[in-house]
Length: 302
Ligand SMILES: [Zn+2]
Ligand SMILES: [Zn+2]
Image (tube, rainbow, N blue to C red):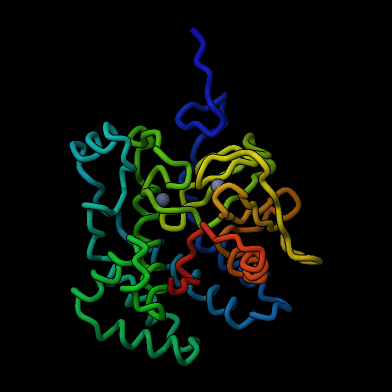
């Protein structure tokens, strides 16, 4: 019997090509390097440099963090049986260590932070556990009305450190085929952007990069990750931009996701290149497309 796979299906790999890639343990350092590279001559250089310092602080926290407890085997088996991502935050609150990580990140970058961010850091340091947990919950549920938007990047950064550590330790056999191509198969969060890989066995394949845990999962190119439509997909880019980034837009549901091409710029990194291409988001807004990528470093109300 032959099983015919619909494009974009998960869980079956052809040869050595992975359907998902666990987070790279050096992901934050790589992001920091790319942010510094992008900052040179950029109109938002100060902001990108600040984000680079935050990513460096994240790498230091990640390297120093002891292994975190994963859900027990019974919970993991139940989640897999129901097609749920094994590390989805719903019903499984973050390990309290994330709050200490958030405070250490704030301490680390306080001196270089712009004034509004320092006020937010002070608020975060003075906050009780209940407030911090409520903010984490709102961030992970994308409840932007309940968020303190100035604190959200730091809270997101701390949660990224913890979830990246968890995802890197997870045995891949616990990962089930997810229901939607827009959700991370490991933690269920949306992607920040996509990458088209180059140079490896998976060269030319598109992976979506998780906003929270850094896992990358394969979704075929030229197919909308929001609604699975593959007709009339259009690509937009900012004229004369040196960045290897485009917006892949779907006329069916009106959403777009950025696509980072590594073939000519192997050092490109989805979160960093997303941050440095806000001009492309402005262009897409003018074209009446809605952003589907999630980036904790640039959340807006609404
Ligand atoms: Zn994830
Ligand atoms: Zn769509």
